[in-house]
Amino acid sequence: MTPELQERLTAAGLDPQAVENLVRVALAEDGEVDVTSTPIFAPDDVASGDFTAREDGVVAGIPVAEVVFEELGIAYAAKAADGDRVTAGQVLITVNGPTRAVLRAERIALNFMTHLSGIATATRQWMDAMEGTNAKVRDSRKTLPGLRALQKYAVRSGGGVNHRMGLHDSALIKDNHVAAAGSVTKAYEAIRRVYPALHVQVECDTLAQVEEALAVGAESILLDNMSDAEMADAVRLVAGRAELEASGGLALARARDVAVTGVDYLSVGALTHSARVLDIGLDFS
Image (cartoon, rainbow, N blue to C red; front, side, top):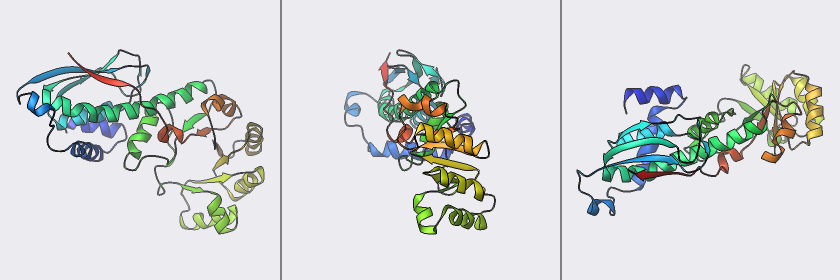
């Protein structure tokens, strides 16, 4: 991988080595020989083509596709950047290289780009629906194993905000923690004794739990499966003393109604676990 591409991946919050490893795993899945292309094309045959958006959306994953091209010795030029709104027919990347290599790269590059662009597009739809409010959409840990960093990057590309990256960087006290510990207070205090500076979020199902979370010092509260009216009441109760995140059964059609309650974030696991791909294709010149 070129130093320039490494720098761009790092600037995007991605680990270049981890991305390269993912690309190599994806290439290995296709096997050593392309039994379709090898008999048809000579080693020195060359092809040029365009990776083109076939529908409107938000693009993400271009640098990941570029890692694929560099792995296979294909020249490329990006015509769009991650986070751009793109329209059907818009060229995203042009490529030129050995025909066998371009055809080997095609599906791997598209698998990354279409999936990540789908996440970015879905994220942008939520942000557009809440335009004019102070709320932002957040992802969750409902990600595909091995792809969390890329999927969360795609959320950022779409204008969303990442929740915790894993179990290691932020505590989230959920109903099972409360049930096992005995109360919100006991669970919160147990974490604080071990991790006094850690960001701690408390999941609350009722306003009574919100009051308890505030009393114990929680700086972040997850409002789980509350109605819009209950969330508005929680916003008034908290009065800026903690950040509030709506969660549970949220749908795009409801996004604005939830946002205007005054919550800071909407937690949407579907951004990563259910986003449809953005249609992108490769067309030879």
